[in-house]
Image (cartoon, rainbow, N blue to C red):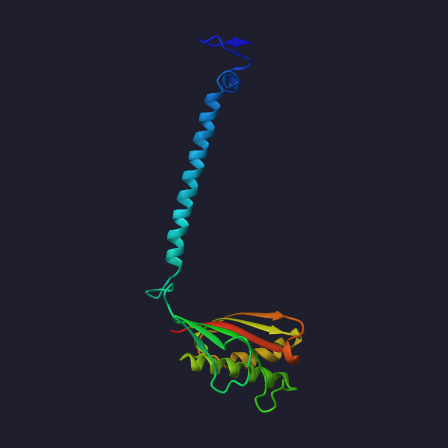
Length: 192
């Protein structure tokens, strides 16, 4: 065992700090205080950075979204009393509700899946037109399908509705859809 200039007994030189704590617990407390101050400063810096970044995140196309008006978009011939809008426009972004390919004459899903797909996409196109947009304004689309074996039948019909670049898309096997539909489409469009 070694002793230092104060006469403290130490078992090993590399354990000197721990040995001092046995005799001077207030030094250990100072380290905890410094740790607390360091963590608090880190937390405050993190919160400040998050606040700044989130402020940048809500800044879009030269306008702050916080005070921006929301506008609901509903087709004028809408005959469904559903608890949602066909779309909601915030700034230059349109959020489209899920849409089925219902035949407006029969109010039923057609027997032909290709006709159903066309009716569904025509409905999305009509909502986009009502908002002053086109199919080429779509940036992302989710297609829910109760029978994924229809993927190859759906794609050529879907592709025919676009003149420019296709939006990002997910084709999701969904299980049973409302009213016996095979497809449901929802998406987000940004006015160019």
